[in-house]
Length: 217
Image (cartoon, rainbow, N blue to C red):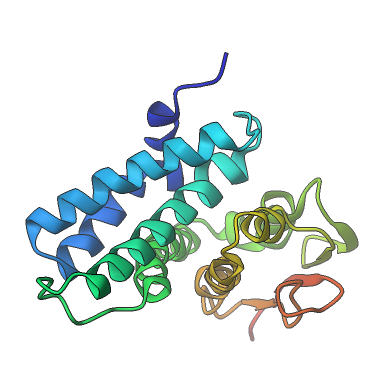
């Protein structure tokens, strides 16, 4: 039996999806349109979940990709309908990708701030973070190049985010998924150095992640 998509959506973005979406929608739209768009996003997610052969075990799709596609599609449809409606007074036409980026980056900034605060409180966590980074981000889907407490490097050579967004005809949103890594892991602490200068999205042969701990003098 297929899971209840509405219940699954409550846990999207680590449980912050609805809050993030409504925060940004209420910033850019009046309350009536913001609520209307939110309801359409919920409907679109349910539609995507039912049409795609997705299981609850496909966590990237269930909790990140499909919710994001739902947001992007609904916003695209809103601007298209507004363009065709002579009575529509909303002529700003804010790019759908820009609004989605703003929504998704709320989650990324929250994650970044959590790590920054955790590093300040827990020196052991800071020193062990390169390996935690490997286990959290790359485990099970990467080629491990180096795995030490001070330095880890791994290459991701296939990406569910790219594959599914291409299948759903909105590959542009993958640029946001890539950018969120830089937001999350750059400038977290003076003793940590993060790098990823190749991405599958950009046409490279892999996404090359690395994290280094450097004891400062």
